Image (cartoon, rainbow, N blue to C red; front, side, top):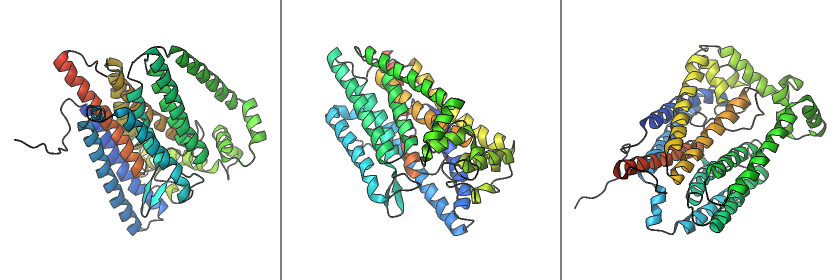
Length: 403
């Protein structure tokens, strides 16, 4: 009788393009993190070596997590356990992690980390991953109109509770935006019978929110914000994105230096390791501001373009899979993972280029952060497991409709 052994090979039927793009971006990001860490450690070679070892370890664990989740479909646990209970226990567990961050002090004004010696865990990243899992499970079960409505409303409440904890309790506005955006889109694309009126109301609120954002970008809106800004750094960041030179040595300083880095790098860059601004002008050169460092050293062609191509491959394939699948659960997994990546990309790139206010959101697969890397690669693994399941079912039954 043969025994099953844990395999670290990519499963058959998986989407190789997503795997290769994610792997390439992880390797590229690891190299640039080590280069950017020279700025944080003022050229201390021993600290750079430690950063290299740490990043290699993070990458190894995260890649293993991606392969594991691609081979083991989490939703198959329903064959052996009560998934409703497991999902609720998981929700409570993540909430406890989010609330426990206040015990470990703040970093840059945010209480977003649990520090265990040399290791730091960022629960908000775990919450984003768990939201994809939880919403994909509950919102894909079309039971009855009354039950569907109850589930839909519960998911709204559950998601908003996470957002409130992250924004208010942890003071992490960027992660709150990402989590809110992921949950909003997943709720909108869910197709539970009897929930159309809730989606219509959500769409109206979205239109009102967009209108408010547009108003705040007008001269009248910025004038209003200037009057109420006071010492609120979030409002100051919004004003800085509109005109960083209004406060060049305060809220606009890092954005101005970011733009200077982009301009300095040009098309082909100064050469890897040769960024000047990472040594003195960025608070987090290997995290929030890693893109300006990359462009300064490698330029648009060798630095920015590979990132755009890698992201493009991942996002295109996820969107393509979501459009062609007949499985409600798979579609929610694909859309949730797509939103996870696209929101991080837009907030990070938009922030460091001055298109939108800085939010402190990392660039997934590129910025430093072990929790972020493990969670986003795990999300890709979960999406791959659904791709494998759907392709197998289509080959066997001619359909991938099972939830």
